[in-house]
Length: 637
Image (tube, rainbow, N blue to C red; front, side):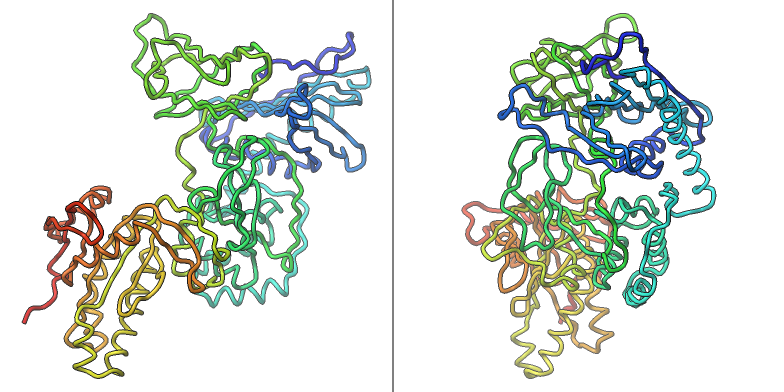
């Protein structure tokens, strides 16, 4: 339970009212956490009122203000105005969370609500609680309201399991009131979607969500996260939403994500409207926009189908920042024990501070007992641990230790222990804009003229038709052009299946982009393996011979000739690697091949031939690998 925070003093004769209930459910703690830690959806579904939150306070304007506390207001029962100060949530992932509210007026002075999860047979025991301190004798009358809120949280779990047993694709409960949906228009646009190359089963699930889902489930949809809920392929669900947007069922939005707290801060309706920089009020930091993690594609239902309001029911719940393992609000000179056991490195940071401390798992403590206390102190803007455990790259935490966070400052801080990796469920601009289907459906989605955005990782596949001059001389312009044009279709289909997209054609060559190196390399190999059979099916004799090269690295995304294009050293090097292809092979730098999936790099059907050469524009010899196979080698003679 969160330690008391100094607020308005209650009447001395009034004692806290605490209500708690618990039930055991046949599901793992992680599942219960995902269900209950989405507090915005939970509050919406159990019937709590929508809340208006103030912006974070500016400590520069008022040094006494705590920038971590938000003012909030709502209308209880839809009519009674209520105002309070909301403190940041405290939580430890999959164990517990709590939030404290200090009310400005009324019969309640303070209230804390939360849940606690305990593993038990046959799964998890969920304890829901609320504790309120009355400010007057009238506060005693609030017990029934508090009890109802606690019971509703457990009933939410019961409804979830009932929907799960009923076989619903998305068993998370939704508000009982049915939304208003324009059915006739929905059916017309669903018919357009059904004609697109998307699975019929996913179309049916999408219709169910539009008709039955809550407003928050239809705004800011992350397609990869929804795919995980449905147990569907992520790329197929993304394709579903791309085609659904073209059919007029959804609108796409580009969300600007703070790289520190990792929540949306601004949005743009098109890539052309992306700003160069944006600011996070919570973290107090401005960031440059890039394509990798700071621009994410999300979808919201089209208002002509259903008007989904943007009302907020909770702003600080744990699933708003799911990468944070533990978050703790520490008062001045307060210690707090936080028992977590991360499997790998995590980082400790303080909100509104640039300092980070890497925490790595260390050896078990040699001291007796179950573990030792490891105190990490925050002072002068930095976290510091015991000198004996400090390493060059951070702090080694002995296995079984009790971690204690100490705030040695005169002001409150918000400490967060978080995963280093970004969530894989984000459909980033870097990933989406490499897809052929996105480029086909949204060709107008380009950056503003002159705008350049960094992409830290993108893979390029260059292909070129070998002997095209002789082809034109031998067949004549029209027949030769027909073969070249059809070969572009072959490349396009192969690249699309592999998860990439064609950026542009250059004479008889093609430049393609992929989000993942493995996809680019796998597609390059399949192109060489399949081109001969494709040529025979197209009555192209002798078969066309392709030169192919793959490279990856950072690049600059910008608009050129009306298309989203890429520039920089990686692009130039990819083209020069492809120049080393002799035809029927795939050429890649040795160091790049080492970064690829071993199943691709060391496939038994491939022969890897190393060679060294000087690439145009580079001063040193480069070590390359030529990948060939029985099906990739061009016919001789």
